[in-house]
Length: 68
Image 1 (spheres, helix red, strand yellow):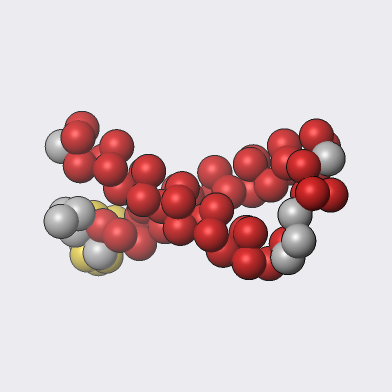
Image 2 (cartoon, rainbow, N blue to C red):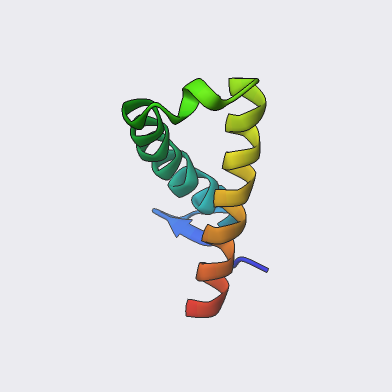
């Protein structure tokens, strides 16, 4: 499980930090996918983006767990 983060005395769940990092990473990945034209091959862009976010969030949390 992800530990809590202490931000100036306010404890927030560690998953929130992972989700924010994934959101930034998702923005970069979406920009790359749009520039390369991969979105043209995607049937439903919204569903694809949600699935991609879940996969990236799983990757970020896995990397975090291995580091800690």
